[in-house]
Amino acid sequence: MKDRFRDIFGPGKVLIGVVHLGPLPGSPGYEGKLGRVVARAASEARLLAGCGFDGLIVENYGDLPFLSGRVEAETIAAMAIVASEIKQVVKIPVGINVLRNDARSALAIAGVTGCEFVRVNILVGAFTTSEGLVEGEPGEILRCRDQVAPEALIFADTMVKHASPLAPTTLGEDVLDVVERGRADAVIVTGARTGRPPAGDDLETVRATLKAADLAVPVFVGSGADPLNAQDFLSLSDGLIVGSYIRKHGRAGEAIDARRAARMGKIKHRVRA
Image (cartoon, rainbow, N blue to C red; front, side, top):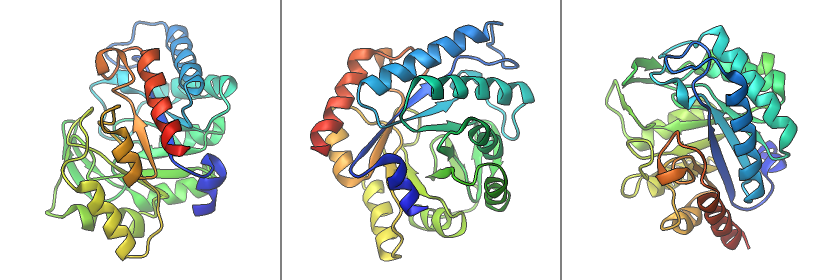
């Protein structure tokens, strides 16, 4: 899948924006107006594409509190509708993240809508989270991909935010498991919580660990990127996944702020040039 990554995103650094969906059918905050959710998502997708973002991730952020396992059928159906609409209005790659960790549903949505990748927060191991115990299912996920979305890339977090490993481990050991045993196509490094950047030298640790193991896997910064640190992060990674900063007041779940989105697009353009 290494060549597939470059076929999708092209050469150079990659900037991916996150489309935070409003509450979907079945979630506590749903207001009975799916059309409004779809329209806002499509509008935000067009905005991010226009600001120079190279890809998007669509996630059901508005469904807080998230389910720890499989999501309900209505969630999958709604996200498929949204993803299909977004694929109609933008030409950049689109990914799916079904929170909290329903990778098989994400792959199903990607397969039927033609999305190019999925994000899996916990691909291997077992973690305690605010939603309870969440376990990775690499065997089931890889088999599911072969059946329903064989061309979809798997972007997987290592030591993901809002989670702690059930068994003692290190960032280096976890990222090796994510790539070697989970067969992730790209690795995501985050901070401890939404909107926080990776701690200390976590990014360098991941890069050095993969290099020492001769594993040529793209590495993304998955939280906390902003205009103050974006250039440094891009010099140490293959790309950024930005969800919080580009929204009003830098707050996850708010509407996208066009000025903030444009600022990130310009930084990426300068680095890429």
